[in-house]
Length: 93
Image (tube, rainbow, N blue to C red; front, side):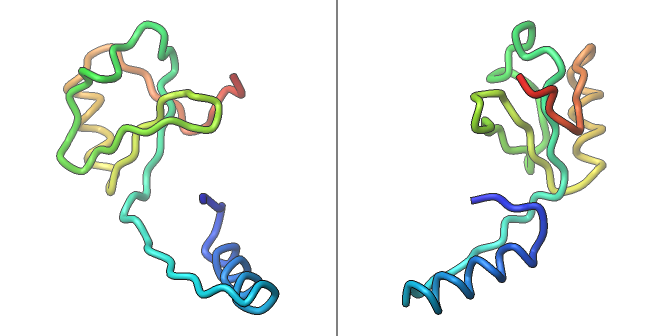
């Protein structure tokens, strides 16, 4: 599950425990930077050269997403993949 802020996780945890009597354990992931690929049809996502902290995932619409721990890694990935263009927000495909 993904949320916009930490407070939403707190609300989810509270409701699951109090309304459904379900115990929940949350694990935070270290990723702080997320980017969509501007033109995924022309990019070989599987063969992108990233950094050791880069994670490749897909959103709910099947669009590829790249995750990083820090801004330095985002820039390093761009430097290693000439012509790669990233978006901070999805274009609602």
